[in-house]
Image: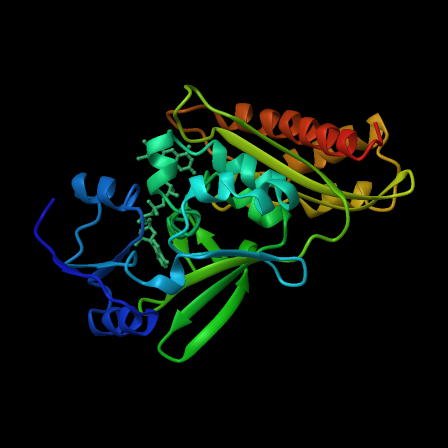
Length: 288
Ligand SMILES: Cc1cc2nc3c(=O)[nH]c(=O)nc-3n(C[C@H](O)[C@H](O)[C@H](O)COP(=O)(O)OP(=O)(O)OC[C@H]3O[C@@H](n4cnc5c(N)ncnc54)[C@H](O)[C@@H]3O)c2cc1C
């Protein structure tokens, strides 16, 4: 690691000013579980590190039945995993957060840092996509929002400009009772996902009113499997439809082969995990 200048601003505005001043030379620090590793490996060598943990407005995790859930930029995985409202209304997100690394990683690492690191394997991304989350971004000209699935541009790349930062991620209020499934495959207990999948489904009578399916680690960015969703929307979730949805979800993947596993393994596993997630979600809704 090489020497760097350290700032701990007290407000988002100060942080954005620092980003603008040190364009491209500065890195934001939340939990540091990704950033410090990359700095030690000398993959990233910032001249300036801007610590966000002293900014009080970024620390909150708020829920209301009218507004939904807002997760501030310094909220950790452990806070999300343990929060009663998250467990009750956004179960797939609580489950996803509970799988990130070890207890140490979860008490230090943040959900927003997980998104900003923009790994295709980020564990919270599929659940956030499935719940229709929105990313809130602050920059020198004010705040803008983007849907979470549009936030990622490729491995390590997001829509953030050099003078922008994420202040929060928000999830819409619950739209009635839902069922969900989250599943991931890794080589060892603490490892990033080879493949992950998540789905959230809503029922009307005996049919699926709506469903959102998303996958991680099978393309340059986490993805939403919209063609797979279409097979189930407005239909009874029969075994044949679940199998077809799983097949279409796997067809949407653009996996790579790497040291962890082959592209073929990822594609096949995407179908298996999608089907398992759908079965779990519809079982929660009493439709299976
Ligand atoms: C041992 C270990 C195990 C891990 N296991 C997993 C795992 O199982 N699943 C998984 O998904 N991840 C895993 N990770 C990766 C990491 O812990 C997560 O991605 C974590 O959520 C990152 O959050 P952080 O707060 O530590 O981010 P940081 O390291 O502080 O930041 C990550 C990146 O995001 C940028 N950033 C941070 N906050 C903002 C912001 N508000 N606006 C703009 N940019 C910002 C930083 O500049 C940096 O580039 C693991 C890491 C370790 C060390």
